[in-house]
Amino acid sequence: MADTQISDHVHAAFDAAGDIDGALLPVLHEIQARCGYIPSDAVPLVADRLNLTRAEVHGVITYYHHFRQKPAGKVVVQVCRAEACQSVGADQLAEHVVKSLGCDFHETSRDGSVTLEPVYCLGHCACGPSIMVGDDVHARVTPERFDKLMQRAGSAA
Ligand code: FES
Image: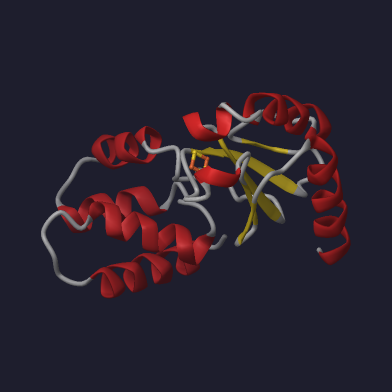
């Protein structure tokens, strides 16, 4: 991403977040919504504007797994790792997902098609294991159902 684009996104993120104290998290969320990740060149711009050090901004980005430091794959898959889903087979599902995508959590598949992320509850606890594929939540996901969802996501991409 070009420097001018990053700078435009950072300015727009500050405009969207408003003039509030402690704007770091809302601004980072806004930058990720606009860019798909937090470009490293955005860090000094954010730090200067909020009178923080680059290390402080970087520390927040790395602390919250939600923030990506690299562009995501075409599709983001989030697998619920919280207790209710674990009690109905989320661990076995997660094992299958990692194996079938060929990448671990917080990684993107080699072909760039899928980024895999853990999530801790999607609000569908009564019908787990739950996952999100893009913006869609899917409940009672079995390994077989996951494979079908990935086929569908691949043909839609
Ligand atoms: S625990 Fe998985 S959706 Fe709530």
